[in-house]
Length: 239
Image (tube, rainbow, N blue to C red):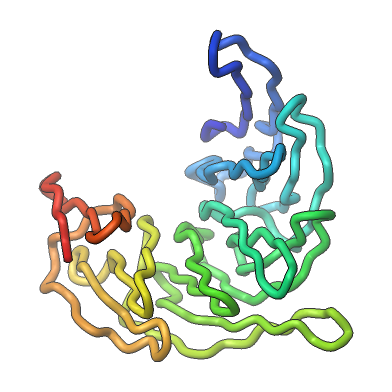
């Protein structure tokens, strides 16, 4: 899956091309200046991805064996640059990701839109992959700050989402955060790049570095440490 919107599947043993889907015609507008940046997600014999641009685009589930479409969901907007994640809550398996103007969830089984919450960026730069913990969904953007929303399933099986808190001072841009217990660790774009820690429960900034030391690469949560790189290319191993 490259920036031009072409998805290819290869045999792992031989490298033989098994199938290829070309979505490049959906990646044409000038506003989609970075092309397709979503990482496709594989699960239970399916591949999930969101081709398109600012004109629109459907979130797709494909059969990994042949690339044929299993279902197509319409979130009401084209993709952002964030990658989808799969999450199970109250017996429902769902895909959660960002479009160009919202954070949304679709059902894994048939692609029906479960819920959507506005999260619009004026330059269409929704990049950060959401962090999900039970009923809580954390999203962040360079102009939207960091926000926590909560999802609830109603008696009629419909879904409701509502905002819990917003921290306007922590503005994640390209890198995605990690969650350890109740603490969110991330890169913020403020002060030419900061390492920050937030409380998931309250949104309060627990600590932040002075600046000019965080890179665009995402943090990695290891067994007992966090791995991160600085703008100078130094690898940090953090408690």
